[in-house]
Amino acid sequence: MNSSWDTMDLIWLVGVLVLVLSALSVRRLSFGFVVRSLVSWALIIVLTVLAVAHRNEIGALFATASAKLGIDDQQVDGKTVRIRMAPDGHFWARVKLNGVERRMLIDSGATITAISDETAASANIGTSNGLPAMIETANGTVAAKRGRIEKLAIGPLETEDLGVVVSESFGDLDVLGMNFLSRLHSWRVENRTLILEPRAGASDEGSDATTVPTDAEPRRRAPRGAAGSDEGI
Image (cartoon, rainbow, N blue to C red):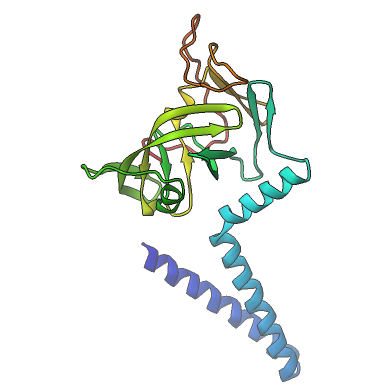
């Protein structure tokens, strides 16, 4: 599949260059101008490819810059965390995994939280040597190792001993799934903002998000715009 996509990309790039050369030759421009034009087009194509390939890292940099400028997309209101919808239509949260911060996609269609090998190594998240979990993704079924996150936090919302799957097949995408969302008291979307609320019995400004409420079962409302899948991520 990857090789066929690479071939299509190559054909597309060659086609663009042919069109540019044809347009320049018709106008009978100087050789130096043609060379400069080709270099400019090549730089544009390279920058576009790099931007797409590293879109998650770029998004994380923008999120960090926004926080420093006071225009943060993730805000804390008492014990509640509010996350504005990103331009791509998804909800991205700044999450701490064992104290290590990562930008994660909140996905109500993901049964379990899933992270990359790099994130697991950075957060010191170990994996078991047992049978791998088979996870359905947009690119097909992949094998993933099972692990446990000692502590996960989104602002004041904290939980412990959370199950996770780890695989290099996830690339640089880390996904926060339903096994975390179901531990909250409620989660919903209002005016393009995802609202996460702790359990009714939570203490210390929203910590202990998994504390069992005394008067109600957890409510689940799927956030519109979150990526979905049948199982896994």
